[in-house]
Amino acid sequence: MSDHELRKEAHDLDVTVWVGKSGVDAVVDELADQLDDRKLVKVKFLRAARGGTSTEELADELAESVGADLVETRGNTAVLH
Image (cartoon, rainbow, N blue to C red; front, side, top):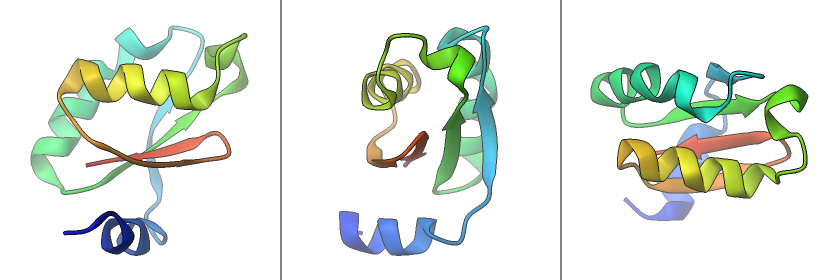
């Protein structure tokens, strides 16, 4: 599927993973399990997780740690495939 099709499909998805003050490492296992069950997962980065880091940097780090592709980031939310 193209990125455009994945973004369209992700539009109506609910956020199922929240990254908080414990950081990206705390959600790696949960995200990997969810990616095994479904094609797309929407992740929300809370203010405590971001600190001085951008959402894009955190999303890239999270995608790399689970071997996923980053489809898009919008605001404080990312979609992983």
